[in-house]
Image (tube, rainbow, N blue to C red; front, top):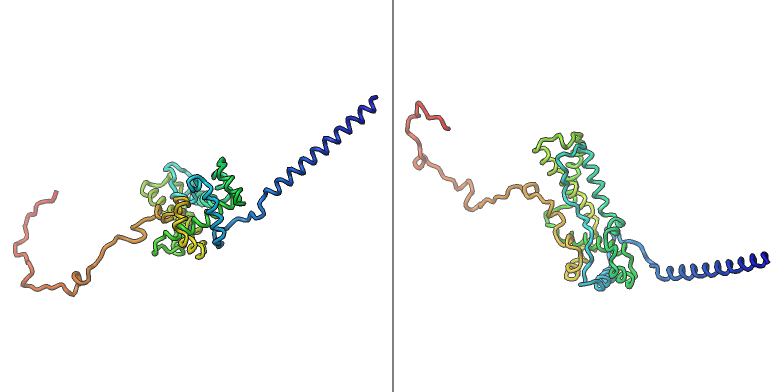
Length: 283
């Protein structure tokens, strides 16, 4: 009797095992059918095609108010080290550079973008696009949009060259930041602003001209949907007018030319009084 019970139990267990195996197989096939065939991410130095842009905009049209959910910022502010930071300046600079480089990481952005937004997930699913792909398109198009907002005199290569020289000098400074005088701290933070400038420009300079032209041709659509930080000068909040342009002044050559200056002894005002032998002290 015990033998029969044992055999019966094994048969039931085997049947349950086959059922679970079939269930897992069906689940696996279902997941495979819902998976994306194409999951490659768009790099910021790669050309975005018209068809890719249309697909991107179709996702956005499925979102509330045709707007992208709040997008994590990738443009870091200038360093604002506390006056009591005791680390050497070189360490503060290196740490700042490492932190800024992580801002552009797709995974970092994905962890803070639309994590509980079901509407976004549904829109991406309907258009066969992963969230990371959507983020990569936002960065590629956003940086191209930023390029269109630069002033003509903002030469990216020159900014990198100048900035790297200043940053290199900061990296040679082994003094604790807290040991500096107030004036030295102010000057150091002013120079450290180049860390953020160079970080942004090294991304901006990678944008291909095709993407800039694509953004310009679809500006009316993109300006309504791209994150706000991509719609203004990307270096505007890090600008220093005196450093970039100097103190402005103009000379009217028609009126202020030295050649127009006239002097004659007849028109000169010449003093004739004797010097005061006991001049009063100026208080």
